[in-house]
Image (tube, rainbow, N blue to C red; front, top):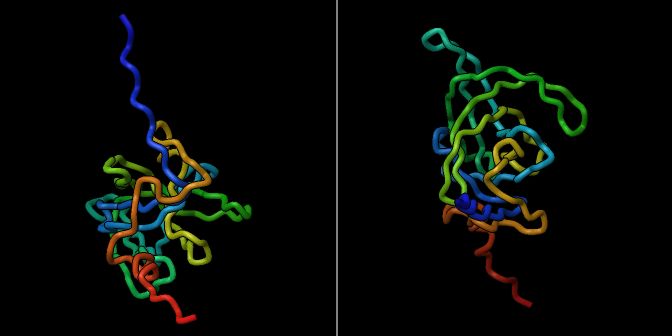
Length: 165
């Protein structure tokens, strides 16, 4: 008896549009970062509080790059607080939450650290723990399985009129 063949893994680009439905974020551009173990979301006004004896966190997200006006407030239970070392070697103490991510019509739970990513190019990093055994990453391609939503600033920028020559 032979075992059934596993379906081929979907190939994603080094950046993709994902959703975080549990946080009320229908679309955010994410860097698919195999060099980062954990996933991270740009959050600000992060405030810890207690609800029914459990640690929670409330925070605000700017889901669009280069847009400081659009905000999404969110709350989530805290799994733990972790010391995270950045690529520059700086260590920060960050809350870790669990939420669902959606990419290519698939949904699964991920752990997500909340961090001030103002200086970073992406509001979201999807780390290798989140994509392990789900996807292969083509580092030379972008948006292999996703497109920007119609209301995204990215979509608006693409509709610019050409300048007269």
